[in-house]
Amino acid sequence: MEYAIVDIETTGSYAGDNGITEIAIIIHNGEHILEKFETLVNPGTTIPYHIQSLTGIDNEMVSSAPSFKEIAKTIYSLLHKRVFIAHNVNFDYSFINQELKKAGYDWKAPKLCTVRLSRKIFPNLASYSLGKLCQNLGITIHHRHRAMGDVEATVTLFEKLLKNDSDSIIATTLKKTKEHNLPTHINQEDFLQLPESTGVYYFKNKSGNIMYVGKAVNIKKRVLSHFSGNSPSQKRQSFINDIHNIDFEESGTELMALLMECKMIKQHWPTHNQALKKFEPKFGLFEYEDQKGYKRLLVSTFNKQAKAIQYFERATEANQLLLKLMNTYELSPKLCFFYSSRPEQKAPTDYASIPDLQQYNTQVNQALDYVIAQRNSFVIIDQGRNLDEKSYIYFKNDQLAAFGFIHTDNQTREFEEMIAENDKCLSNYYMNSLVLQYAERFPGKVHYENTKANF
Image (cartoon, rainbow, N blue to C red; front, side):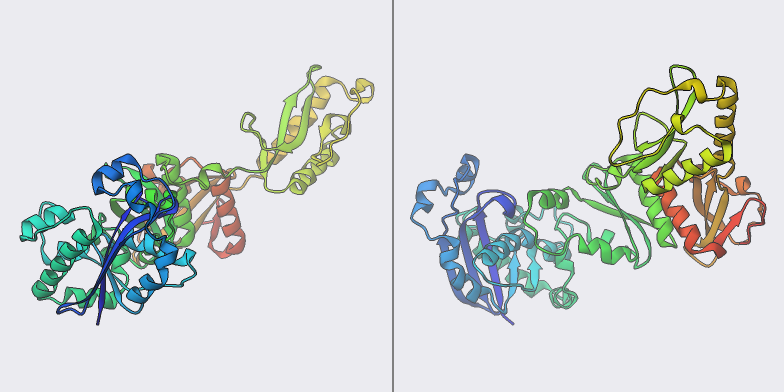
């Protein structure tokens, strides 16, 4: 087996908007060096001053250097069918992968990270940065923060790792082929404890605050997918760099996972969760009082400032309910408004043909009482996280009121009595819709208030 041990210098910390200024590659067969390659690279952009100060590579030095595209064929031939090794491997891999793609090369390689390997083979060191690690292991670095100087030190480090690998950690890592996808600052033990079951997972930042909540049918597989691929965007790199700890909760069912995800997002408002924050209903049936004191009903688009009598995903559903109320309770077409994508200009209301105020408002109140009376209350009983428990979802008056888990030996039959205080939740339209859709799909799991819930 041959290894391509690599180090690069760049204009910035993420591949999406930055370029390579220098690259060094050493080919190693596990016993000795076979080949060396190094060159400056013209990144096609200005090198920031603080990078110049760190590396000693300035704009004048790279002005006559080849572009990456000009050396891409050589780089590809050096890396092809070899194990890619670097200190903090995902950084170097993401830059080189992007540049090779730009040059028309489809390249992938198994990866080994000398940071992660060092944590296992040389545990309990204070730091695993290349400089501190080499200092602790007695490795001299010539020309620090230059590609060849750093890659030569990485080669010596790798040789020490091979020599001290009494537990065959390197071979095991290559067989697993996935561990190297984890960022080096994430504790591997956090990942290994993740189950391959349904539930939610939490990414926490360095301060221990939840920065992202996700749900998954297979928690371990889904978490790993966040670190696979080689997207060079600043957004993705920032996201990955923020993750320092991983936690999880099993849910038993996918619906429970979805609800747990929504609840945690509403509680913590993680910085990297965006989609669920914006989810709102599209239409609603609203009531308001006009200048004459008459109560009016209208179907309109969702408005945060006004509370609807009932929310809808489609305008036709809302219009149909309003039409039913008008026919049943003899509500005036002059005081009710359907939703239309092309609203017509309405003339001033002629109150002459409308019943007197008190009588008409009574009819409207009766219509609203009907809508309220149609609201559902039920419990969904489903599988739990193990054989000794069941999950429950309590839906009260068309609103998700609580969800959690209960032991199979529990003899409670009253809905309200089964609810633990921390199971209660403030629902939203999205959560309510999930529950109603599930109840429609699985009617056998639904227990209404006038029936007994069987655990």
